[in-house]
Length: 304
Image (tube, rainbow, N blue to C red):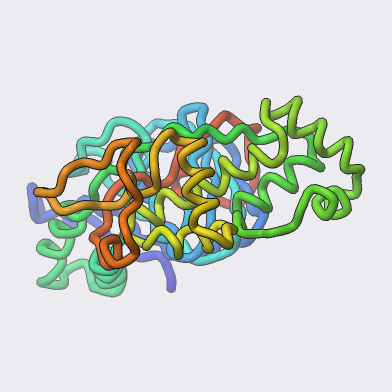
């Protein structure tokens, strides 16, 4: 699809003028990078199937498929593509933006919101359905809290290549010996690089990556066992134990609950698969981590 521009007719004023300047679907290619820059317009980037890493406000933000990131106008940002896929960037008019978000903000894109964005891209600027569709789109954009699992990325190119691959594919079962071969270095060197540059040994660093990747899945109502398998755990019990060690809570804490249900505490028992199935979308998506170097190249989102 090509980007859709929405010019402002001189005769239109007030609410009749669309706040959307452009909707730009694109294919993000792996290893593409975006130089540090800023622009006056706020932007939304939704990752449909790609995995993106954006640096905004001196922090890294992981954007997995099904999530997006809001970057306020005038905010410097850069980014990189960790896993190729489809993305959509929406540019908003700074003086007509209905969102009051002043900081980089994560959001989830469910099936309804995705369909509305697609409709707005395909619809003509004067389509009668546009005002209602735009209003609903902005109403469906809900900020997600960022959790506090910080992922420091190593700067050495050998360890960095391993780290980026694991972030893009946390279920990868390759052990340290295999990763050392992959990075054309020794096990001892790779182990030392992770310890000195991230502050964690390789196994602990990988566990943090896996737990962080699982949180958005749980927030979307994916059962604990399936989320565990998706990030590389064969046994849910091992995943639950690692989750508790890393966050101090059980995975069930991050599952959405009906408004009348009690809040889970760190000592709560793990809900059954039947109890956690088909829950609505809720918390924690793209997550901030430690700063990383400037990126260069194609804009893989908006945004980051």
